[in-house]
Image 1: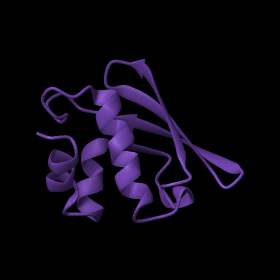
Image 2: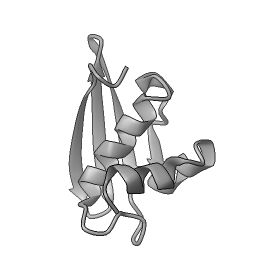
Image 3: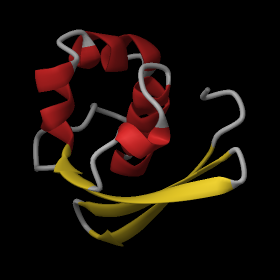
Length: 91
């Protein structure tokens, strides 16, 4: 799934992002909040959001990803999320 996906992350304001996922001739749009203190040290919030969507797309289709959510919500559905982000982003 995630190999063909194009993920576009746009910062709307500090801590708020719009994410467009284009894949298979269609797209979805999502709003994501990165609360203070949730990011990964030395990595921009936009990069964390993009990698988080790669993580999600490996586990579910883009249409199953919530339209609007706070980034920490991912851990409720995928307990391995935080550890995997640290591994992927070199934290």
